[in-house]
Image 1 (cartoon, rainbow, N blue to C red):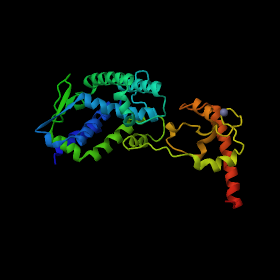
Image 2 (cartoon, helix red, strand yellow; image 1 turned 135 degrees about the horizontal axis):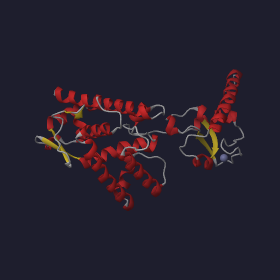
Image 3 (cartoon, rainbow, N blue to C red; image 1 turned 180 degrees about the vertical axis):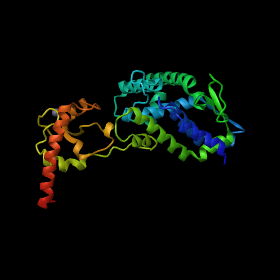
Image 4 (cartoon, rainbow, N blue to C red; image 1 turned 45 degrees about the horizontal axis):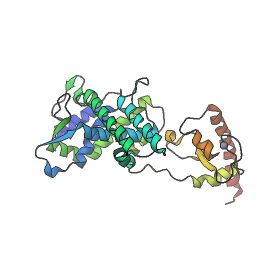
Length: 307
Ligand SMILES: [Zn+2]
């Protein structure tokens, strides 16, 4: 096993700075490419274009942003360029298709085939390549002003990097471990400027196939106990059948969890109107009151022995 090579990789990941998450995205892209490469056709060196890396990098940021809106840089006034570009692409997508948050992999066909969106996507990739060239490609190899040798060959400004076949294979063989380290470091960095809960879980879930949102119907029984007349939590008016919706008061994207204490009935319109914004304080207080009541109702119900 090529220990020196692998150790250098670990050293880079351990010593990353906490300004932004570029190095993590860059590393993850290279390891993912190592997993997908066709080794039969590689003679000695394998070429990885920065364009290929850019496609991977935007996928990570797209999924973290569209579901969880995670902040990826320490300076709130100057967010990392790649994140801004990703957000612009997401906005473009939403303006054209108006859909619920969706994984990058599922919109890829639109990004490459839709006339308007594909143009925007191509432009975004170009700009990301520029940032990768200027800020990540060679800096990745620098630790405390020293350049680590033999990770990959890259000349400043080039459109590709070259990695030895055996090194690529080492990345492939240790991919799971390296991904775990990257996700751990990525979470640590995010924790320094995101105050939202469950960062690790949010970062990890990006690697899983589906971000599953389970149906909330199983809570109806309990919500009905407290609110049998279906009064809307937001506007206090009665909700006609057909317009009833179960809403997360603290947005799902923030908590990344369904919990009864956070669920209320709202009108379908009142629900979507507030989308993913953290609620005003009066709604938090209102939720607190509701939960006190609900807890009482539930304990009465439990003690009554009714089904
Ligand atoms: Zn309402």
